[in-house]
Image: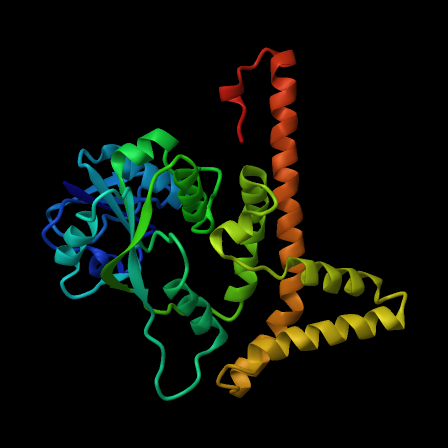
Amino acid sequence: MVTVVIPTVGRASLRAAIPDGLPVIVVDDRPGEGEPLDVPAHVRVLRSGGRGPAAARNVGWRAAGTEWVVFLDDDVVPGPGWTERLAADLAVPGIDGSQGRIEVPLPTDRRPTDAERNTAGLATAEWITADLAYRRAALEEVGGFEERFPRAYREDADLALRLAKAGFRLARGERVTVHPVRDDGWFASVHRQRGNADDALMRRLHGREWRSMIGATGLLPRHALTTLLLLLSGRSRLAFLGWAALTAKFAWERIEPGPRTPEEIATMVVTSALIPPAACFHRLRGELRLRLADTALETAPALGVQPAEVAS
C-alpha cells in the first residue's frame, strides 16, 4: 500500500530517516558513483545522477508500485509510532495527499539563533517534503515534481499547487517527524538566497499571487531598494545613508530575537549586508534563465529542432 521514498546526497543522518516496517526506496542523488550508502538490507537504492531532489523523487515514486508514496528527507527522524500514525492518516476518506507534522527541537536554555529560527519555520510550512505522502495516481496525473527546480526549494510547493488546481484534496495528518537543525556554516543564510532564482520560476508557473497561495512572505522589494542604494552610494551620500539605515534595520530584525552573542551579532551584521545583493542577483539570474529558455523554444522550429530537444 505504501512506499517510502528518500532522496539523499549521502548525509550521515540518512539511516535515522529510514522507517521500519515499510518498503523504502533511497534515491542516491550524488553525481558520479560514490561510496555505497549505509542503508539497511531491505532498502532499495536507485541513482538519479545529481539532478536535484525533484528529479530524485520522480525516480523514486515512478519505481514504486504502491497506491501511496511517502516522501521523507534524509535529515529527518520519524517520531515514535510514525508507521502506525501514517496508516491512520492515509485512511482518512477522500484525501489524495497527507502532510506530516514537523517538530524542530530548539534550545531551551537560550534564544534560538537566526539559523535555528529559519529551520523552525518548517513546523508551520505548507506541503514540505520533509514528510509528505501522495497517491501515486495523483502524481501520475500532474507529472510529479517539476525538475526545473534544481534544489530543495519551492519544488514541493509547486507540486502542491498543481495538485490542488487539478482538484486533489490535501490534508495535514497526525504523524510527527522531527527535523533537527543543521549547522550549515556562517554564510548559510547568504547561500539560501539562491532560492530567489526558483521564485522566478514560481511566478512564471503560478502568476504574481503565488506567494499568497502558499502563505509565503518575501523581502525582495526591500532587498532591491537596499541594493539600488548600495549601487548609488558611491555618487550620493544620501544613498549611502539610506543603504546603511536599511542594512542596520535588517540586521537588527535578525539580531533582536536571537541569543545576541558576539558571534551571532557578527554573523548577522556581515550576512545582512550580503543578503540583499545576493537575493537580487539570484532573482535576476532566474529571470534570465527563463528568458533564455523561451528564446531557445522560439528559435528551435527555425533550426529544425524538436521542443523536447531544447534544454529548459
